[in-house]
Amino acid sequence: MRIAVAKEVEVGERRVALVPDTVGRLVKQGLEVWVEAGAGEQAFFSDDAYKAAGATIVSDTGALWREADVLLKVNPPKEHEIHQLKEGGVLIGFLNPLGNPNLIQRLAERRVTAFSMELIPRTSRAQSMDALSSQAGVAGYKAVLIAAAAVPKFFPMLTTAAGTIAPAKVFIMGAGVAGLQAIATARRLGAIVEAFDIRPAVKEEVQSLGAKFIEVQLNEETVAAGGYAKEVSEASKQRTQEVLTEHVKQADVVITTAQVPGRKAPILVTEEMVAQMKPGAVIVDLAAEQGGNCACTEPGKDVQRNGVTIIGPINLPASMPVHASQMYAKNVLTLVQYLIKESALQLNFEDDIISSTCVSNNGEILNQRVRDGLTQVKINA
Ligand code: NAD
Image 1 (tube, rainbow, N blue to C red):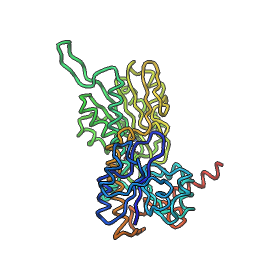
Image 2: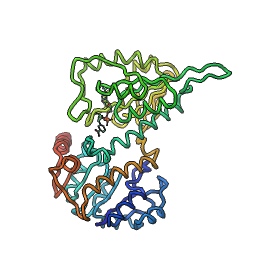
Image 3: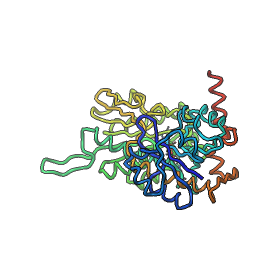
Image 4: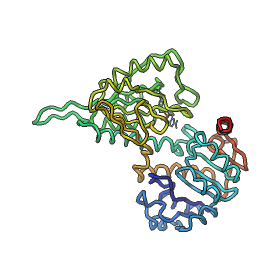
């Protein structure tokens, strides 16, 4: 069985789906691994390193796509790449199935068996395959470094001959995987950190990282199935904003990470709240690509409002390609090893990891939410 690693073509993408160490593990298992020439270049993994791990370096991109039994990617394939996928072959990557159901339909038409890394269940059994978590951790860490570089102040308290410097106040909104990593990073840099999440269950985790948890009493359930946040009513949004405004006003740095799966990101920082912030304050909005948690955010841009800088970074994991690739590769390796036993694909759809993650097989779209999304796209067209 031949596993292939394609070079990413998305603008700004620097990650690669397997790193040499993970290639070596598959080769040891008796699998043949092809790596497209230069696939790891942007992440500083050379063709020679892949070769030393037992991979065959392939310069002919078309041949790599056509002859792969299992093709590994970070980003979804482009239209011209889908045509080249082997019928009956396997594709694994972030496929954005809910955001782009048409892509999944195209893959089903090509009879590709596609696995979407976004849909790995958030269970302890699947933890080592959880690429959303590994990449969110990278983003949370980097968001704090971006904020620390942009804010015109120190993060830590300093006692110097030139006087005492007060520590920066950092407010993290959304304490999921990215938010918790942001809290830990801001604390390591010495800031005073506060955090808020609509799920009260994260309070203890926030506190254990040395941050203060801001509580907002709401008269409705805020947690959906699977432990994710639910979209809340307008009244709850209003109540939350009232409480949060006071904390946003005091902050030197606000980092927003709030998401509701399959929905546009909730607005947590309104224009009025930005207008009340301290001049020189910085907001880093990790939800920029999903519409933003701040009303002023523009994805991929730095926006200035009354002396406040609002940064809307895109694809932060790609800015740390060495470790982001290393972690993603480990997630992908674990999934591949789970799916392939004795050099053959073993698909047991009774297994929740396989049934959640596999979006197309045998010419059919398997995921109901993707099918619903497709119907919606057709109605809107
Ligand atoms: P996410 O990226 O979907 O959202 C980030 C955070 O934003 C979440 O904590 C969410 O509660 C919060 N949020 C949403 N709406 C908000 C609002 N209006 N105001 C404030 N905060 C808001 O989430 P994620 O980081 O991918 O993970 C979230 C859930 O998945 C958590 O329950 C987490 O513990 C769970 N999880 C479990 C595992 C596992 O068991 N293996 C792994 C990873 C994550």
